[in-house]
Length: 152
Image 1 (tube, rainbow, N blue to C red):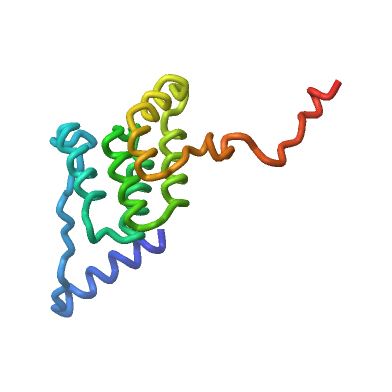
Image 2: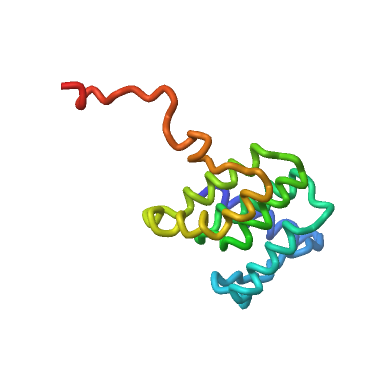
């Protein structure tokens, strides 16, 4: 209440002494959740981004983080382009982390979607010498303890 009264007082005071203030007008910017970009254009954009020869570590991680933050599972061709970018950057850990993120994005459909993605990217994995997190044993906790409810 005090803030409102003070604001009105300042407006009246400024007007009475002739001080012109620039009024701020904010243009309404509406971002629709529905983009005009087709799925093929989206895939081509990210594929071209990862295929850039001058991509650096920060840009690769940023694009991967953006993709994993979206409500989608990346297409195998995007996964392949990202893995090749990891190989160009000589960042094996990023490639494994990317595969873990893609697996996590499959959500409850993991038993059907993730094997399909692995089947599609298997030749690239072999060509680049990259193993999957499952082949490295990262899918099983190393120091997992038995549940106290399963002991008896």
